[in-house]
Length: 163
Image (cartoon, rainbow, N blue to C red; front, side):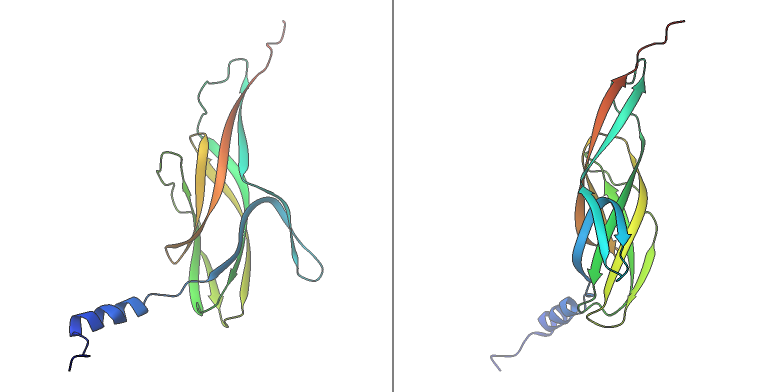
């Protein structure tokens, strides 16, 4: 019985195979807009990874104030072995490695391995620091992928009006 697998090792092996299969990522980008053509094909317009936050006024703050940036996220997910219901969420990670709250919950269901979900999300993200952010794409709480987002702060001094 030299080839027998100890019971504890067999349980461990079964536990690894019971991990839920996640969808495959075909695309995950930030863009200006997504156009849906007549033949149901999406056209992604102006892919970007940078947003500029401006401080306007006679004496704008030196440091970037907390605010909202509006982004359009376009995702293409393919079922592969992930047949059944899933929940998609976005989560923002700030440059100081702190996470923002998870936003909406988008339920999707894959009926066949070849099925594809094209998802366009218009999101308002609360940013409080300039620098490199990450937008995590979560499926059932597990990270599928990350989308980079660079936030730049620009002070724009407006001249005082003469009275």
